[in-house]
Image (cartoon, rainbow, N blue to C red; front, side, top):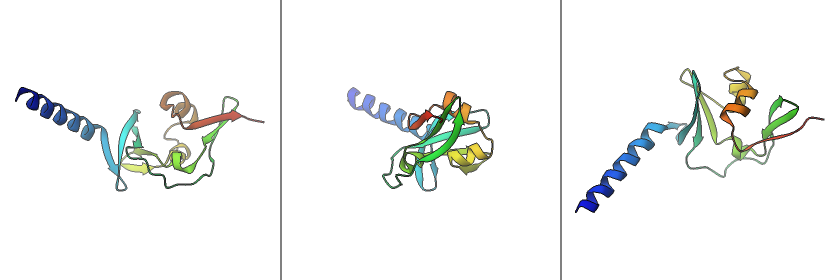
Length: 117
């Protein structure tokens, strides 16, 4: 009986943690991966394989050109700023954060940097 109560308690706690750190955006569930001063970056909890193989260019920083190797990886992320939803490129274009901040502070593993020629 005690084991059942402990397991139930753990499930409830985990559910609360997931609900607190997740948000539904455009009908999909996203979890918080970074909180800035006035924006939050979310990543898709259940990644979709729908997307493209297009390279998504983000820009140049510190001698490298940065981007996503595929639209599929790029589409995993959303930014919420002043209750509006942005893609990463829209957030960069709107100066919600800089490419330097994205690379150094948010540090997404799917972003590739190649030497600028």
